Image (cartoon, rainbow, N blue to C red; front, top):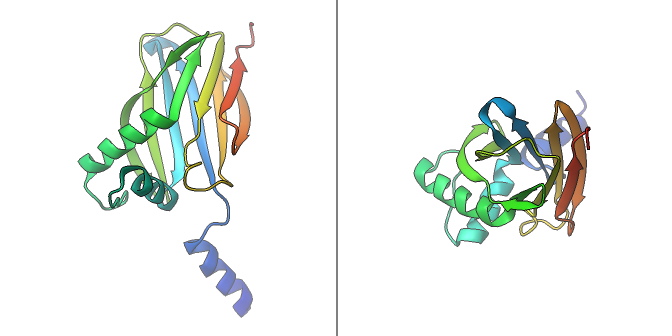
Length: 162
């Protein structure tokens, strides 16, 4: 293997040139709830939370209870959902780590199947202005997607029957 390729592989293992998160929003009819999962690079999340909380954060090996508190505060401030014109702040459920990424889980309980969904988020914009947030919304089994780029904060979706 050429030295250049080896160095490039090592470099990209420790530094990712893209700043992307994925937010998936799905209505779960049997639970009458909106399930939300967010996937972000763990290192970007740590740096963002440190700036937000003015405290050291170790999302991979740190105190889980402390991390949960910081994540709940951050996502409450930086992610909201509008269902058919009514605004909701999703409840924080928890997080898990998956290699170099972290999954954050949230939920909105006791809601009917929405006709229109707006996702309002600026997660990680305060860390990196080149951040992109890919939003997937699943309504009536159909996936719709939208890419938000700084400074955009809102993605709107409608059910197929609307």
